[in-house]
Length: 109
Image (tube, rainbow, N blue to C red; front, side, top):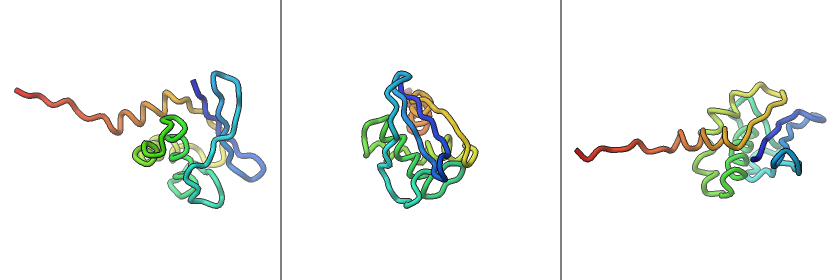
C-alpha cells in the first residue's frame, strides 16, 4: 500500500510516496500548472496540481486523474493545514474517488 507524506521543506511543499513502508520517492507533478509546485490547505493551482498528481499516482491513469481530482481536492487537499506535514494512504484517496463517482443503484420495479 502506498502512503503519501507531505512536508514543507526549504520553502517548498514536497510530497513523498512510501510503498509498503519503504522505497521512498518524490511524487511527480503530473499537471504542472503552478510554477511553485505543490501546495495544500487551499484550492489554488498548487493544490490542484497535488490533487491531480495523487489521483494519477493512485489510479495509474491520467484520464482518471483528470476525472477525479476535483473530489480529492475538495475532500482531502483543501482541508489540510497549509505548510504542515500530513499523511494519507491510497485507500483513503480511493474512497474519496469511489464516493464521488459511484452511481446509485436503480430499481427496475
